[in-house]
Structure formats: C-alpha cells, structure tokens
Image (cartoon, rainbow, N blue to C red; front, side):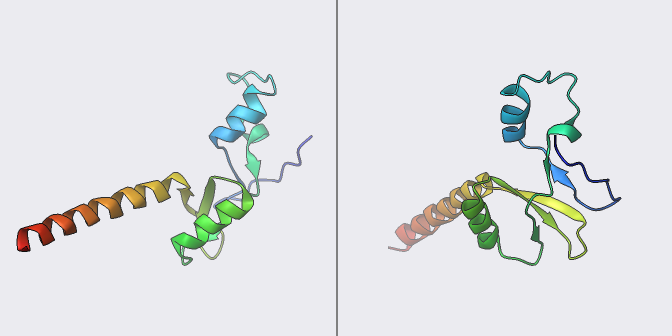
Length: 109
C-alpha cells in the first residue's frame, strides 16, 4: 500500500488531480463515492516556491510529466496551484494584446 505521512497543520502533504481520479480511483475499480481522497492523492508532490518564475514551473511540469505544481511559501505553506493550462491562458492573453497592438498600428497608418 501507500505510505501515508501524518498531516502537519499548514504544510502541504499532497494534491488530488483529475489524473488521480482517473487512474487511482476509476481505473483501479474503486468506488468514487466511498474512497477517501487521502488514500488516492499524490503524496509529497514536487512544489515550487512563490519567488520562482512561471517559466520554471512550466519546465518542472514538462520534465516531470505532470500538469499541476503546488506553489508554497519558503516554509512550505500552500499558497496556490499552477496548472499547465495556465500557460494556454497566458498565450491567449498575449495573443489578445498583440491583436490590440495591430489594431492601434492600423489606425496610425
């Protein structure tokens, strides 16, 4: 079985993602209505501190083959979660900004 570490107040010990639901619950034939999340979550996931650049988080996800990385403070307190899909949101935002710039240039010309 899995090694379960005792929960420490204020310290991230694991995350539960759609991959955990798909592979550790559904594909394993467990009952989603009765299986405790603590038994199927990813324990001790790789994390990133909040002072690191977004690109580093994307690199970690790419190299590690995962799509989520928890953001923690220097002392390990959970602050948030970055998903690889956040990069798509950034691309969409940058694309929108580029369209606005092109419209502004067209007006000037």
